[in-house]
Length: 185
Image (tube, rainbow, N blue to C red; front, side):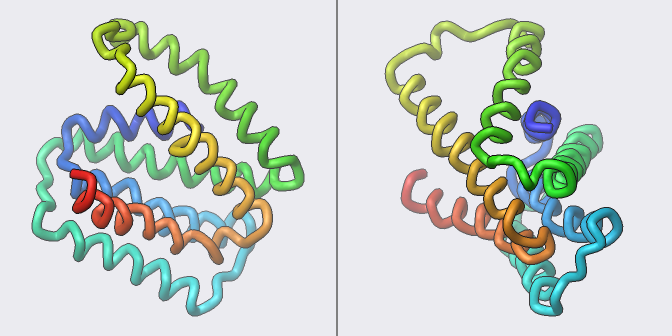
């Protein structure tokens, strides 16, 4: 799921602008909420549904001025990425929530590694000119906090709460990204 989700996302975003990418990728809370009704038989509270709809509407409002539809292949890849993430979430919730989140997180990342290495070499290998101190420090940050810790938190939350109860909180990611981009970029 990690390889599929991220691979489709990264390929899709190379042909679609950032605003459209954010909107499509963050359709995930809507998709996973709908799937959870049918597969997990979860019922959402009124406020959870309103929160998810409000979050997605806010996302569209934030990026409305920059929405451009151009490359339909990229859009399809992004939609498939959001669906992949949603199915992975449901699969985890249904079959693995009783397992330790660190164990599932570690194995998930470990099992993704061989496929990612193969894809890297199919794309032309590692660009050795990038292997400088700054790049390596950023990759350590992204790999540890941006991926491992984020997935751990994600698995902990889905292990304890209903999918429908926490999905709307994922809309904080693009909103916070806009805020942080003002300071960092």
